[in-house]
Image 1 (tube, one colour):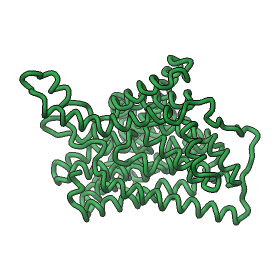
Image 2 (tube, rainbow, N blue to C red; image 1 turned 60 degrees about the horizontal axis):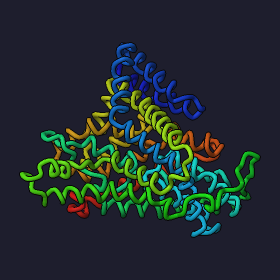
Image 3 (cartoon, rainbow, N blue to C red; image 1 turned 180 degrees about the vertical axis):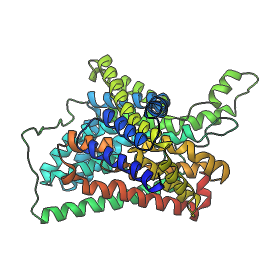
Image 4 (cartoon, one colour; image 1 turned 135 degrees about the horizontal axis):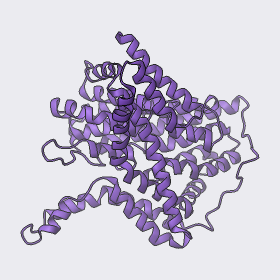
Length: 469
């Protein structure tokens, strides 16, 4: 069998996966079935591949990231059940007014996402507010999914300091070969990240406002539905704005400032007199697990009376986390199964040996693999263990620059139609179809992050010192 046949099998199975997911089929079913089809048609042992590569990839992803997913889902469930998420969203909407309804939806999603709320919870929490704001401004509701997606999975999800999983995976994957310590942290490449985030926000918001105006000129207006929840709490029955943002602030501070403060304090402690304290401060974790946990504790402290069933809230949150990590792991398993196929090696050899700058090669590699995996976090989980020895150990790429570039790049091709979050957002939350809603989503979540990746690479080249920041 020649290379063309193997490539046809790989991309054919990927296309089938996307088609079935877009048609609403369960990712838990279609991912292993498409993996089985790919390995069988490639001449591999299907039983060995499914019991071996597929399940190994599935299980390893669960092992590495279940706690972060679960705590993030618990955090989001707490913010949802307590009314904190809708209080924040309502406050943003009141500040901006109905003439800026689209911007209000985008910023509400951005605040929640950058505060660590799960993407899935952001969609459910902000949608009722979006309906109210779009109705008041008489805007076409088919653009609600694009506004939510743009605010939640672009300029905040992969930015420096974000507690989202897409910004935390490189911390676990880019490790020193000798010591096993991480070569990066959540703030990696922050100067470039800030400029890229501002670029994506400005261009994306301009684009959404433009297509909304064009749709209105074409006669489109808001379409009311029988199932709409027309009223959204004004916040009088929920927590105050200060109480609502407290868990977000604690999470962000714990993720971005607490590790730095502990590491600096360790240098001041007498290691001989207080060895345990010095070791604790010096090895303070820089992943998001503890930060999100502290945010949950803070939320319980300030909003306990808003949570009549704490155990039920936590149980539902962990279940949501299990479903989220499971659905992502199913796609990662697909990627792991096809990773050993001849076609994948052809693609990998191409993207990792491009006659281009290493950061460009890494960005293309992660974007392509994330597209095959159908997930930014899943793509990073597959790509980084392969790319780290090539780009850091052999080519000497700065780990912090690589972290930021691959994080942004992973958020581009992952947002093709089969992306699990987008399928849920369009079909289940907003009640729309891909035909009506996906166009602006493609521009804001695929093309725009790709442009942001190019800008990040250019900034790291123009300002080399930023690669170490």
